[in-house]
Image (cartoon, rainbow, N blue to C red; front, top):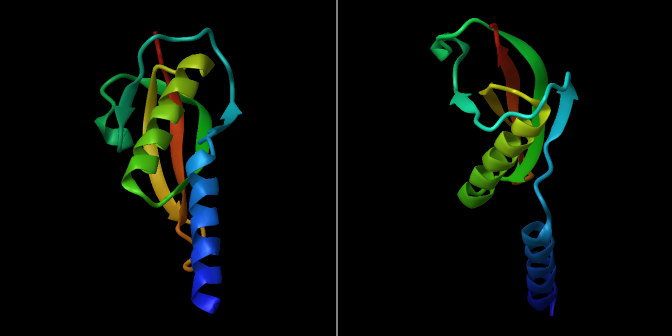
Length: 112
């Protein structure tokens, strides 16, 4: 009896996770929307002079498909905020017992 209850609980949790939308949180300045975003994984890789205009954070299950979706959602939101690029800075684990992570990125605007 306990095994079937645990199984139902796990299935219900997985269904809730799969139905959830990844929604990036943004804190920063908004500019006119952009069409393309350059992605970086280290600030030293950015070859243009730039300023950081904001910060993104999004929670995601620690599964490859969800992490890719979270990255795409951050990119789409960065376009709306007018960023020219993103520097993906970290993946933080919420806690050891959770399979949830927080992906963080800095939104940048190139100097003209």
